[in-house]
Length: 125
Length: 208
Image (cartoon, rainbow over all chains, first blue to last red; front, side, top):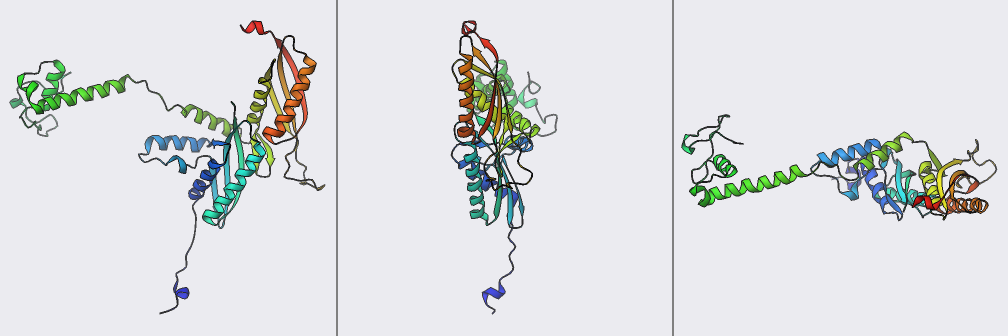
């Protein structure tokens, strides 16, 4: 019997774009002053269709609308579009989301994430 | 409206589709009981038999449910239109962004709306329009050693209407200070220049 190290089969590890998007979206939503994420047109229409047609819809915590991800090897390009409210400093908020999402993705997947944040709207009182 | 041809239950055999009619335990045709209930001509057996009474009860509950649903106006979920329009607008103007920092940007229309709102909150003023431009980055990033992570300054042009009697000279000073302060505090971007055009005056009495 050979040692466990030499007999271990090779493992290929890949994380899907959607999995990373769910992690990023969940973390971005948890940043204070982020009111929500803003989906693009295709995500909005697909989300609405899924809400009406899918008998087992995705729980709100795991929805990834507003985040697009492309995983390349051990890197992930993440784009997050958020909505905030009037008051907090938008630049500081965007940098916070950038850092928090990158860290969450790295901790959960081991991928180095490049995060682009766009504040799409500021909700007014 | 009759669901099935009327007549004695014993005369009713397979339905037009060919499947045998499933009778109630008491031997009555459920469809016929429904018809009688709808027409208000239930006989003594149908009024007292538990199977027939359950059938009548089924019909009543379904009728109530269908009636309630039919009476409801068809409405999409409350935020569907908002979601779609927000996404359409965002897709139409994907590049209309202010740069906050490398990899961080802010919708220019959203920033303008926020500044307009701030002007609207000032006593005696109403914002008409707000245009924001941002200085272009140098072709060679930070050749002079400046911090590339600092947002480039904004130029804000705002048009306002002022209440009749408001000192217009002080209005410009107030708006200018508000724009500079809001740009730095709320947007996180320095404001290098503010152009204010007072385009109209209004009389509060006209609003009454």
